[in-house]
Structures are given as C-alpha cells and as structure tokens.
Figure 1 (cartoon, rainbow, N blue to C red):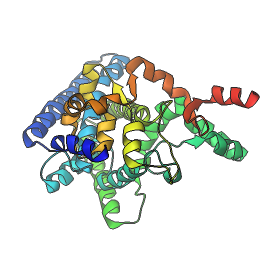
Figure 2: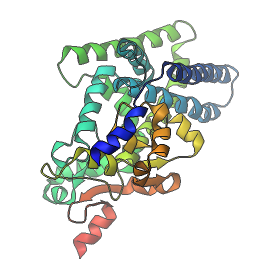
Figure 3: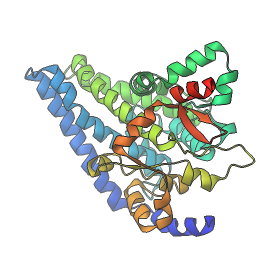
Figure 4: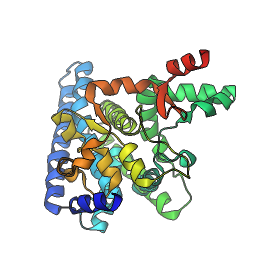
Amino acid sequence: MANELNFKIKPYAKPSTVRAIIQMANTLIPFALLVVAMYYMIIYNVPYILVVLASIVPALFLVRVFIMFHDCTHKSFLKSNKAMIVLGHLFGILTFTPFFKWQRDHIIHHRSVGHLEKRGIGDVWMMTTEEYEQASRLRKIKYRLYRNPFILFFVGPLFLFLVGQRFPTTNTKKVWISTMITNLGIVAIILAVSFTVGFRYYLLIQLPIIFFASIFGVWLFYIQHQYEDVYWEHTMRWKSQDAALEGSSVYRLPLVLEWFTGAIGYHNVHHLNPRVPNYRLRKAYKAIPDLQQGYMVTFFRSFKLALLCFYDEKKKIMISYRQYKKLNKV
C-alpha cells in the first residue's frame, strides 16, 4: 500500500518554472500594489480602522508568499535549487522568517509528526492527559496559558514572527548566516521606507499586515495537526505513512481562501510527499482516491478545534480542557 501510494503521487512531485513564475507574479504584484494603496489611504486621512481592515487582503497575499517560501524550503517550488535558496531568502524577508532556520525546524517537524517521543521542534506544544496530570503546578499554568486560544492565535503568532524568528535556534553557520541575512533585509526595508515616506508609515502599514498574516499562518498550521482523531504514537508503533495520512488533515476551505493558502489544506498530500509543489496539491488529491479518505475539516467546523489541548492516549483522541475536567470527575 505504501509503495503503491507513493508511486501514484510521484508524478505530481515535479516543479514547473512557468507555474512558479505565474504564482510569483499574481502574488507579489498585487501585494505591492495593496501596500501602496494602504499608504495612500493613510495620506488621504481615511479612518485608520478602515486601513487596518483593508490590511486583511495584503495579509492574505503575504500568507501566499509564505507558501512559496515553504515550497522553497522543501525544494519543490522550482527546478533550480540555487534559485529557491535566493528566492526563499527574499520571501523570508517579506514574511520575517529566516530560510535555513525554518527549513531545519520544518524538516524535523515532517520527520516527527505524530511521534510522541519526538515532539518539541517545529510543532505546537502538546501534552498528553497523563503528562499534564504529572506536571508541576507551574508547568500546568504555562501550558494552559500557551494553549489559551487568545494567546495561541493572537498574541503568540505576532511574537513568533517579530521576535522569535530573529534569533538562530542552533549554532550552525548556515542557520546563523541565514538569520542575519533576513534580519538585515528587514532592517534595510525599514531604513528605505523611513528615509523616503517615514518610519511612521512603515509601522502603520506593516504591523497590521504581519499581525493578520501571522494569525492566519499559525491557524492553518494548527488545524493541519490538531483535531480529534489525529495520529499520535510511541516509537514502537509509529509509522511515517500513517503519520502523514492520519496525522495531517484535509482542510476544505472556500475556493478563494484555498487560492490564498496555496491549497496547503490538502495537508495529507503534502506530508506524504513534500516535493509536491503547492500548485499541484489539489490536482494530486483529486486524482488519487486513497488521499480523499483523509480526515476532513470544514471551514466552520474548524473553529471548534481551537479548544482542543490534550491528547488522551487511552481513547486516542484530542480533548478540550472541559472534557479533561469531566473525565477527572468520573
């Protein structure tokens, strides 16, 4: 079954230079124009609350930039690896994410998704009910705060991209240099804008865009691996293909949002073969019936998953804190 499925998906794991160029054009050009539009809205004294609301659209385009960045880290966006490294760093500057740092953490995530013994890098912090019961009071408080929806989806994302990504996670030269290139690129943009239109405009435009984009990005990642019947196993029982197919959801978004997110909602396809570029994910999913049996999450139903915070090893399901309290009362 494993070899057969991998064989079926392999034809879609081919980058297309034309498709990649088209995607860059229909993403980067509108993004730049929308940023300029926000500037003129401020210049002409449009109420700032309307500017903030308008920033949601370029934030969605920035999510799409991140999807291209993500594909470059998997070496799936273009045929040229050198081009992907260069473009990946440029996309990383726009999305406040160092290329090699994120590539390292994300590859670890792919190799350890659904693996109970290998949690902690490139994923959302998750504790089992048993681990939580045995944790110290301070650790319980930290975990409850971390998994609080307000912190997890509104405070945490902005901190992650503005602060957390500014520091290398390892001492390796490649990761360190990549992080510094990204930081210097961000500083260069800030200085260029400050000496032309003014630092105030940079903040008024950049902050709401990165705020919404980071929320959207973290939410997508959360939904892809945090749902009731998600796959988690110990070393002896963990299997990579089962983790890919059962530990990654199919997030069915409205077509407009699917376009902005580069069809990354077909996440079981992506985890089964990360070399499938985002612009081929939907086609691969539609063409292979076995992939359509993945755990499907609809747009409105996904919001209920925000309250999940523990994995119950006995029942093999994710549960909310309220469910956990009920179990403890029985």
